[in-house]
Image (cartoon, rainbow, N blue to C red; front, side, top):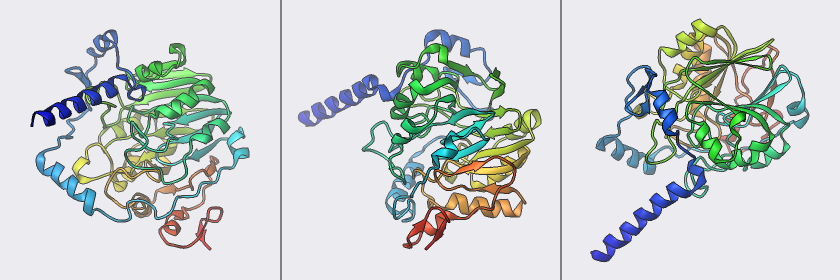
Length: 378
């Protein structure tokens, strides 16, 4: 018994040291920053809070149900085979307004000849260590970073591992002109070697003019944290980008709430909305939207065309991996919403003329060989 206690004690100390020392866990806002946050209505008891009360409690019955689902959940929670990814590098380097999706919430936008990268997570797993947790559906995409053009702006919505990826930042940091982040997230980037003068932190409703673009940080309904002791120590948000020919909104992660109508009233209408709508579950419905809610949120912000994000790369919930897209398409049809669903790696020109979703994921749910170019089985 004594030996067991010693072993458990050593193990606990090892875990704490790993979390404290390993750089992947990032940094923490300093005392001066925390004092400044105290003036905000959405900062209470040394932690950020949502606009409305948000239930994220995990009681015993919930934990037991999660354990059960881990063993008996849907068998189609991930693709049978790796998702192929085809990238047109000529389009990536073009100055034409466009969008390229790399899966989950990672997108490259070209707007007014500027390259804007959102939530760049190119690593193999949304986890502190690559050998634990869900694995990427496609090939490892870290190589993509080396081929990307110089990035003008990187936007982060919060500090979770599936959005703020340490291996990606280490490779990206020297080819990015400027980082825009929610409050507190700069601490992570500073610890990883990004210079302070290349980071702008934003509170909800902050608006920044940057080389002809207007970038606004807007509320979302979520949470944050990368370790055992820093839950909600940093802020989470969505982003609005206004430029000469486009009005773009990305929701960031979060549940459905009144903030969408507020954003629509202040900044809408939007030419394109990038709406979170994957990794959902009734047990955490306050912090992740169901696809039908994503479509309604798109309408709330007064969007014209919608793209569903936060799916297609990792299994972080118990629904089938194709469920988000299938449900979003049905909801969009019912509410007469224009929806785009590009392939992984596909570049979509933002000219207002878009083809209907090809449902490329349905072909990947079969054993047929898949043609990424035509998005149909062959």
